[in-house]
Amino acid sequence: MKLATYLNHYFCKQRKLQFLMKVLLIEDEPTVASVIQRGLTENGYSITVAPDGSMGYELALQHNFDVIVLDIMLPGINGVQLCKNIRANKTNTPILF
Picture 1 (tube, helix red, strand yellow):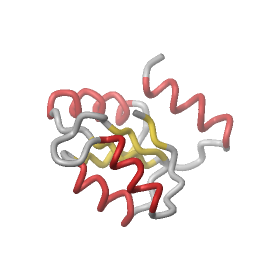
Picture 2: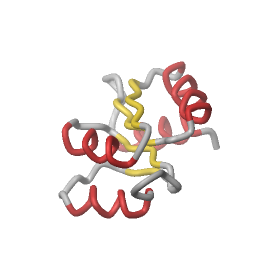
Picture 3: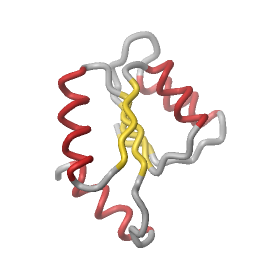
Picture 4: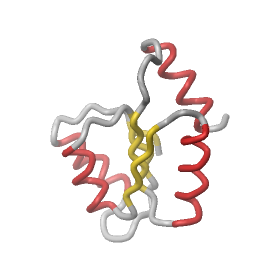
């Protein structure tokens, strides 16, 4: 299932989409980030891209995102540890790996 389709399905079940959904994409590969960003933007999402775990962590704690799309293999801190760190700070934003 395409990521945009999954997000639409999930959030339509949770609540009506009456606002621009904010997505934090944490992805270190520029080509992959660009493709995901373009696809989600074309489907009406507002995308913030973090190129590494450190920046992603800061953004996740500073802003209210509707969902976080997280790469597992990141330079420095990996995605699994980053997820644990985000959850340790009581952030309940859904996270997709």
